[in-house]
Amino acid sequence: MPSQTLTSPPVSPVPSTARPKTTRASLAVVGSLAVDITMHPFSTSPLQTTAPGSVSLTLGGVAGNVSRAAHSLLQSDKTLLVAPIGADLLGSVAEKGLEENGMRVDGLIRVGAEGGSTATCGYLVDEKGELIGGVADMKIAREVEGRKVSSDVDLSE
Image 1 (tube, rainbow, N blue to C red):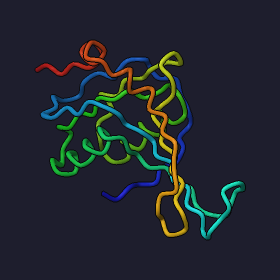
Image 2 (cartoon, rainbow, N blue to C red):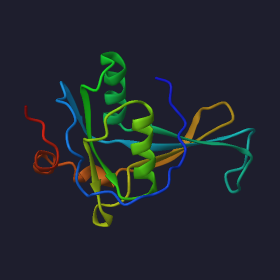
Image 3 (cartoon, rainbow, N blue to C red):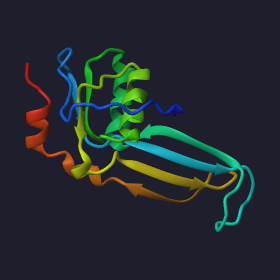
């Protein structure tokens, strides 16, 4: 699935719970939404220094990818992504990215400082685009518990 490069929106205070439901979802996808950061050098570079290249931000995470695919197939607002995001800059980037793709954001659960930062995965690829390595910070996924989803997001009719 092609990814979309995102721009960084300004950070604004957001409530710590999900937004009010707009329309009933026929499909709820619960899990992780991540901001993926891909670093792609233009040429071979030693690892102990920086190198000219490109850096891109895309939305990922298993639930993020599944809900985006479902949204594309259903062509409506009937897909609800239920995922925690941090009250941080990357949480705002993730929310704006969903909105720019015409996806719902009322299933996002804002987690304050105690829950950590938005799920993020950084990838370093070589000049050919092959993965060299990466680091994934997915601690916020622990915030998705049945009780929290039930209390923050209304999945009933």
